[in-house]
Length: 83
Image 1 (cartoon, rainbow, N blue to C red):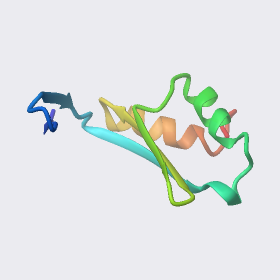
Image 2 (image 1 turned 60 degrees about the vertical axis):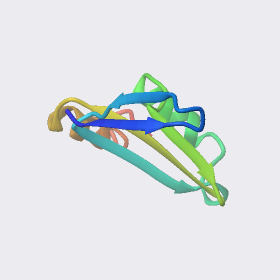
Image 3 (image 1 turned 90 degrees about the vertical axis):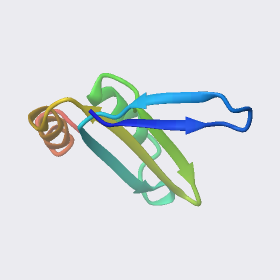
């Protein structure tokens, strides 16, 4: 597993362990239904590991330990009870 080290202005060091697989959902906020964000969170069963809204776009990142888990989550968004 990769590790990302960030150092802030006050020289505090932060360590993040990055998941080996990641699914990123990216969309233009104004062109998607307002409830889409909540539907994605509900279908995932947990909030995003990381996400940001900027310049009219939103992205949501979720990390997974296996390719199978990442693929299953991504496919669940397109059917079978997903968004």
